[in-house]
Image: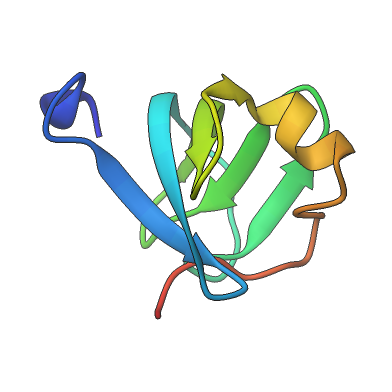
Length: 85
């Protein structure tokens, strides 16, 4: 993720809509790859090894925002899966 900041960016899909990941950092969370571990002040998404704490995102067709604002809008919750098309 950090190798692609600010361009090219990292992105994923949430319920079929593209989600650009603008700022994130590595963490030690555990879960199935792509599983949202928490969606509160930041999004934590499980990876193959460890997890990614997503701090800022740009939803498809929207402006850049904090991951907390994105989660508060009901767009994503703990237990959801991200990735795929």
